[in-house]
Image (cartoon, rainbow, N blue to C red):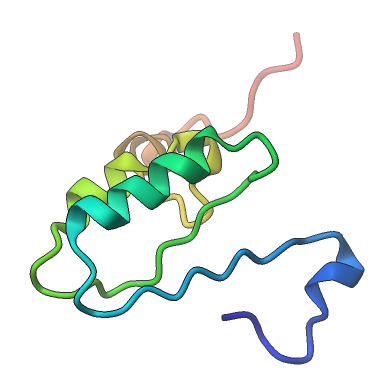
Length: 91
């Protein structure tokens, strides 16, 4: 859910807003993430945490394409955030 005072379409952001129920299976959630990973019009994926107890958070976060990981919680992005060299050299 986005903040109600931020009109996403007016700033060029499309909110797909998939609201899944607490009884969603891990397979269903991973399937939705796979669809979003493959969709070229989707540039960012955000999974609202915490997840229901029957879903493995690590598996879900690792399934998000690192390039589309809005929160930076994919293991590869977490590693990148801990590096001391945060900017690409321009030489």
